[in-house]
Image (cartoon, rainbow, N blue to C red; front, side):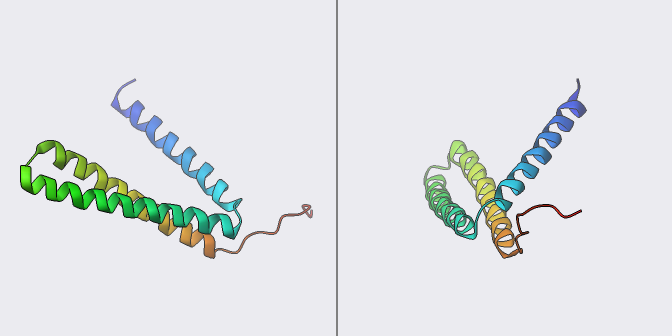
Length: 103
């Protein structure tokens, strides 16, 4: 399997994970969604603080390792922001009523 095969597997995994994640969010109550959102906000704040700390460290030392870690954290912050937006949208969507199916 070449590079295309691994890209396909990665994309397939990502799509499957995304579907599972959306389903799990849809099954959460509004209270659970708000709790999840607040946890992500805390995590985002910690990542931003770490990002700022590493930027300062990088400026002082010019270290390549700090720059690499900084890039990783920036990607994580972007991911968390996207997740927060998704949670906000999910919270605002009307929830389908659970009950017996009508045919």
